[in-house]
Image (cartoon, rainbow over the protein chains, first blue to last red):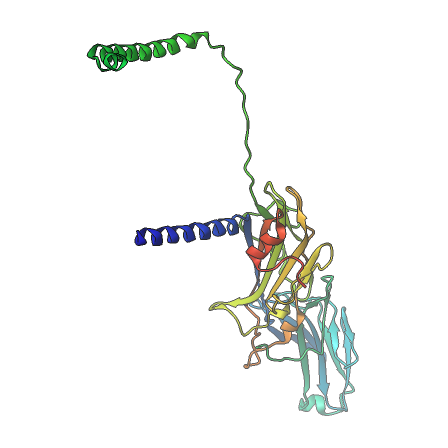
Length: 166
Length: 222
């Protein structure tokens, strides 16, 4: 008799609990997922070429290498002794505030500046031509093409490298 | 006298025979009655059970499947993905079920490299502009740098859409000046950014209790 009462009591509790569980699980729910990803390709690799030096004029061409992953803007500048005068010319090349000549077009990977930057050396002192002991050094910079919110490209020549880890 | 009749074997036999006769008669009667029963007109009743279902819809396209791909317009192969550009991206939730629902959306953004999730890279450089008007509210308590939880405050009727909970996606242009220690390679070169979206729905009937049961809070989150 006693055992039967205990059994009935357990049964009653189980029934009460099961009633509560069924009401909690009765709500309709559902879920869906979606995912998207895009790989970032960075890393311009550029080289400077001077295919021809003639008539005291440097012909500067800058190439964005085939293995480069990013289009770039480029600019160049020449240094020489103060006794020399350098005359720059070339379609698409314009001087900036820092004395560099910027090429107006974007150079895509595998492409070169379509127009040469011509740097003519003038005021060569007598005797220097014969000795050939002078240097004119050309330096250039390339910066990755950036895009504003509207997708318009621009160059930031003040970009400075920094770390990226958190 | 009556008891004597009842106890008589004859009575027993008679009652048995009567019972058999009644049984047979009933069966035969039923059989006979069948042709006489006029056929009633047949009726059909269609019963529709309640169902809950939702789908994500990207940029006014077709409803997406349960584990669909998004952002394909950002890297469509026609032009390279542009760091710094703001790409328009619209995602809405459509109620494809037969009952009204409340909606919650969780958006995850993170970087992955060849070894899996790159936890050392900054998810804030993946800039997602969320729509915090038009019915959407961000649950700031549940949101982190990597995850944003949004609730749609109004129930959505069947075959109706929410407004878009995303407006645009931009990768911060700062990544082009983030170099590795060798000062030659980019930290984010070859790294992939991911955006995952999980949309949850509960019934709008007894909605508050349903949300509390399923999500632990209601859509009045702040």
